[in-house]
Length: 274
Image (tube, rainbow, N blue to C red; front, side, top):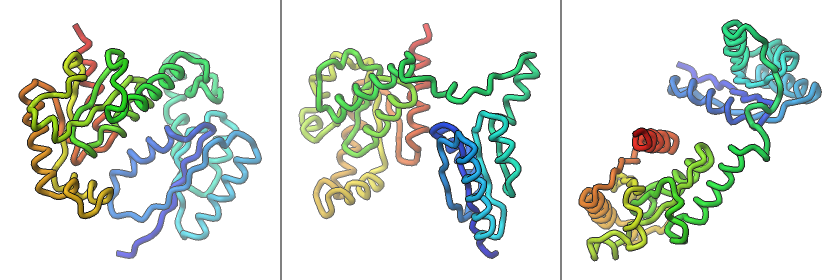
């Protein structure tokens, strides 16, 4: 079967994060396709929407098939101009706002920026503070203030602790620290002393040794650090230590950062429920 390239546009009057998340979730159900992604954030003027429609037309001509457009444009007039283009337009607000207006018996404001809030909002400030905390407490760099952490991730080096910590901070506003388990800890058969007062906040990440070896090989080719035998030994020792100390952990080998973070948040929610 001939492979046809399809162009996917993510169009938004904001950052486009919601449009991308929605689009990727839908497109993940279709395998073996050649997709070219075009991100078009901050489309908030008539001139910008005209330029956007022009790019969609150019993609239609180049590909020979209709592009797919995932949009979260709030303003009706802008969205209508986009829907008039020769593309399959998946309009997030058109699909969900209208039914909600009928259910609530009132019209939505259709105001740009409501989802983002502002730099002065409490939620925004909390996320900024959480990101700062996670950066400061990355990889065990700082032990000061660990009592303020919502969660402390532990695991061997390159098991996904840093990106997960940052995602938890950015997406959920959680103060997430992370701390590596290293060979010296395994030789002592004990957790790092800085973590002992905070055992209730510890959550472990583990990883398949073969995958860990490939990741480490990219960072330090040919090193003992990346050797498969060493990776196997570290992963086994880390999992044994977590079991011995009753630290809950999950295997991050085949999970995305989003999946890992969602699982951890669910775990924290269960713990918070009396």
